[in-house]
Image (cartoon, rainbow, N blue to C red):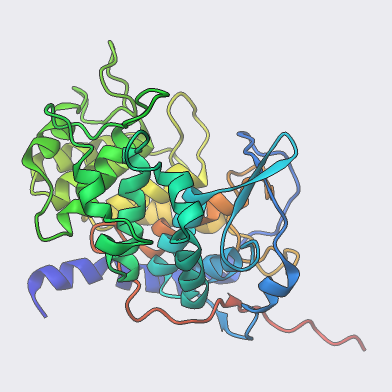
Amino acid sequence: MSASARRRRRPLRLLAISALALTAGLPAVTVARAATPAPALTAPNPSASSAFNDGATTYRPDAAAAGWLARQLVDGDHFESVFDGTAYPDQGLTIDAVLAFAAAGSADQAAARATDWLARPDILSGYLGDGTTEAYAGATAKLLLAAEVRGTAPSAFGGVDLPARLRSLLTPSGRFSDRSQWGDYSNAFGQSLALIALQRTPGGAPASAVDFLAAAQCADGGFPVAFGQATCTADTDATALAAQALAATGRSAKAKAGLDWLTAHQNADGGFAAAGATVSNANSTGLATAALLPGGRYISGLKGWSSLVKLQQGCSADPAVRGAVAYDATGFNPANAARATAQAVLGLSGQGLAGLSAHGARPSAPTLACPAPAARP
């Protein structure tokens, strides 16, 4: 094994040791309102959920979280969000789940079904645009990464050449921008995902696009969500993704500064807060931890990992929610638990996006291993 390979595996060994120490003390579920409400998710199809109840159990926090997430899929293959009483397909959250399953190395059967759903022409065009009058940079980058992680042909995903579509959205400035009658909503999330995804293709990430993201770094080392603002205000999620993208494309100094910013903005509880907030949340903590551990920041990374474990619903919780990760310390809220759990899995697994792969993932969607209830005398 090469030295670089040993370095990549080291965070996982550390996590395995910590998992044995901490899984016995996972917190009980509480019922409370999350600090940041999210659109309600539709209830999963019971028959589809039962397809992923195969009796497999696990002590690993990441695998338990992925197993719970798989059982929340609507009809066993996608997520939906509800606005004003109407359910809409949520391709973005479905992709988050696909990435989470790969990171945990489990729920591969669910991941395959979700990938097939994403490749349906109606689902694909609704997310990416038609490719001519409407084409969305961030969505295309995210789906390209998912296709690569799944090992499917990205140049023929649902009949769309994803790398070519994404490269067609590169502007002369180096920014990947939307082509849309509704305006350009591209941002640092999409730019970072585009670099990570294209770096995995034979042509690599365009140098101009790498330069554009590197130039967007704030003076304090963090990265903003929106480009071109009068005041550069760093954001945890944007910095976590940008640090991974710049590390993957050879900009180690810029990536290091981003990791420095993350460690300097870690809360006392080990978690990370969204921009403008002070309370740690699982989404930001998951993304930050997934940047810190592969980046060699093991102390900060393990603090982030531990804070995620404390938000995970353990053996004293209702069996239906065991393994899920609450958005924050106010308690479990089904309205935002799926998204929180999907992003938390990246941190719980210690996996970055640049080298993420579903190869070798187990098909099962395990439940959290818990001791049998004591028999009554």
